[in-house]
Length: 108
Image: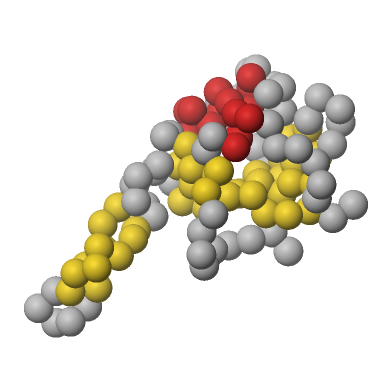
């Protein structure tokens, strides 16, 4: 079975954990995302939290006095998951799915 990297941005890490608990992919007692979880039908799902809140930066389109790009924090909790080709993504995740033009990290 092959997988695809799905890119997600949640408002916070806590929101991500709540969502995966609701989907029953991680146990209720978990307070953070483990390296992987399991769907209710037993498929493993890899979690890759890329950028903790407030760490991911994006260009503003402006330049500083030295000609360098001015950066600002990109809000949210950025998380990739390894997802199964052809499998339907739950609506809870399609709402937070993003489609970066040049992803900085993907599952191999």
